[in-house]
Image 1 (tube, rainbow, N blue to C red):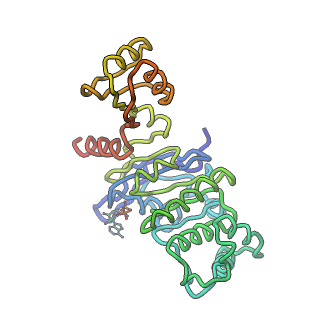
Image 2: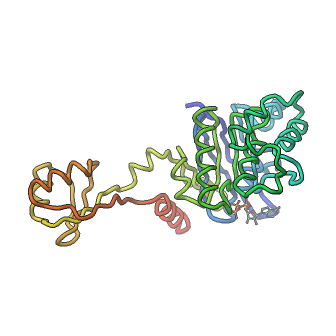
Image 3: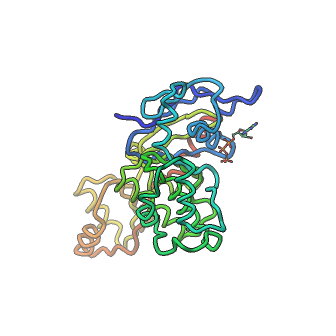
Length: 304
Ligand code: ATP
């Protein structure tokens, strides 16, 4: 597996207080890596260090295989874009002019590709409007647009959906997925919105007290989730008979509700049962959430 970012015993201390302690993490190329941890766990500090805004006290990290102590890291960082905390935007300038400013800041020789960036972040029609008139969601998308200047293939986003309304959240989700798929951009995202993160992340790092206590892919995590389908039926005896015939794993919850622990096609079951005179009155897919997994993990770690 190829990794965009690796850290090795990364440590950051303020006097005796260790914000990060021997932190080891690995971000696979092409992934959307979700960083999860409570307030003060060290997420922003970690991201600031990776961006070169702070220096580690101890330990190292490498980006595209280049260690932070290597001079080449300055060049390598040009392949990265980031929004740490809130994007820095000039409100009295247009979206296009904000992007042009960024071109100057990072020393690009021309303004080529800015229209494509504005299209990608859905601001092509509003590029001449002053950013002060933008909604929070538009500002956040412009922030991502600014991070895209220079054509990076690794984006770091600290809490990208904080304060956004549902529509804004969906826009950012779709933008991240689009950039990941179409531009093969690897993402490193911190978020407290676990439900939202679980819709896009392909792997997770759980941080607690300055350490990564678990790294897991979304596929591995799904295997951990005890998925089940809860069905409410009119004739429980007939339903049990049917599930027995199919050798399915199930649990009787009440005299009309059964939990089925198998991957099933619900419409097939509904049709099959109705032929046997048993009506399915309701069904719900249930399973452990990312939030529960996180709480169990953190609970366990805090009790160590
Ligand atoms: P949040 O989710 O609230 O943004 P976080 O996980 O991003 O939290 P950090 O902002 O990285 O956490 O802070 C981690 C810890 O480091 C906090 O306890 C914070 O008070 C402390 N800290 C951060 N910067 C400094 C500093 N310059 N001096 C002393 N302590 C600091």
